[in-house]
Image (tube, rainbow, N blue to C red):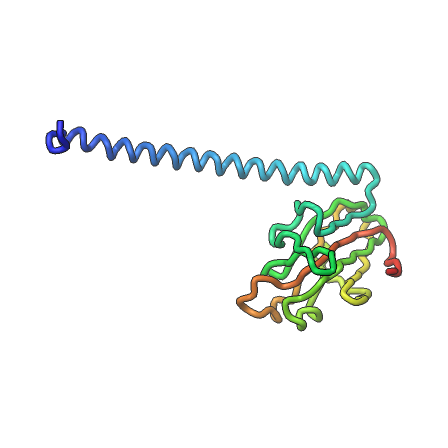
Length: 194
C-alpha cells in the first residue's frame, strides 16, 4: 500500500502516538528532576549530618584547601595549577563565597582566607567577611592572608560565613572576581604566621 492509499485515520494515529511519546518523555523528565531535587536535599542533610558527626567527635576546626573536592561552594571554578606549583580556585562574577560550618561557638575562632589574587587590584580593599549575617572587620592582612576573629556565641554550633567583594566596586562583564588557596577556621585567637 502506498502512502497515497493510507487512510486519513491512520495518518492521524501517527502524530497522536508521537505526541503521547513526547508527553511520556516530559513526564519522565519531570519525575527525574523531582528525584534529583530529592537527592540533592538528602545530600545537604547528609553533609550537615557529617559536619555534626565531626562536631560530636570534638571537631574544633575547619579547613578547605582548593585541591580538595569542593562540596561547599557552587560558584567557584575547578582548581588551577599555577607555575609556582600551588593551586587556586577562582570565584565567579558573583564575587562571594558562603558556607555554614558546624563548630562549637563557646569560644572565639580565627577565620583566615589565603587570597591568591584579584581580577582587579581595587578589589583587595573591598574584600569583606560576614559571620552569621554580621560584617566582621579583618584583624590583620599579611600579604594576601586576610584574618579575622569570630566572636564566641553561647549555645551555638554553627559558623555561617560569607567572604565577598563590595558589589559597588565590581566591574561589569568579568567572569571572575578573586581567587583563593585555602580557608581555615581555627580555635582561639589568631596565631602568628610563619
